[in-house]
Amino acid sequence: MESWRPVPGYEDRYLVSDLGQVRSLPGKHKGRILKKQIGTHGREYVSLSRLGKVQKRFVHHLVLEAFIGPRSEGTECCHYDGNPINNVLSNLRWDTPANNAKDKLRHGTHSVPEYSRQGEKHPSSKLTADDVGKIRAQLAAGDACTDIAEKYRVSRSAISDIKRRKTWNKNL
Image 1: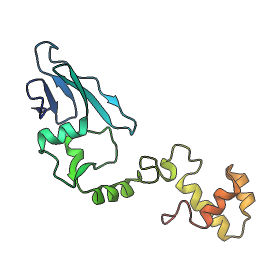
Image 2: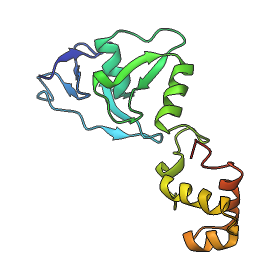
Image 3: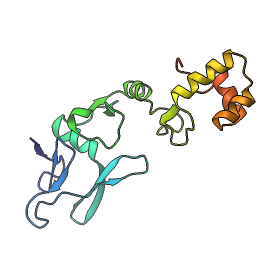
């Protein structure tokens, strides 16, 4: 069952749920669910207003602040599963930037820029982990990088980077 709590700082106007929904209190806006938008880094936010001033707030922050408490100095919001729009309370925690970085490595959401993906999770990846395993086997058998590149429709330098473990370097 969904649980609702007042949004800190907006207790008289908004509620947030442990499932990541935000709604206005009954009255002028009839208790409607607020429309969430996606920010430039893929995180959901809502626009909260008071006295004619609008403030954009991340949904994950609102959930944690209402159900766990304010953020301690030196902590940030972490998503256990790495999905920045999964704002269910059970997926969120306040933790250190170092632990958040470890999470990002674990679920493959860390690289430069910070929010891009690695390996087959990268939107422009042409290869799968299975392909890379086969490529490494072909390289070990002495096949030429050019021939392998042609077969997989990637550049020769992509095969060379795999060979030197410059890319796809995780125990494949």
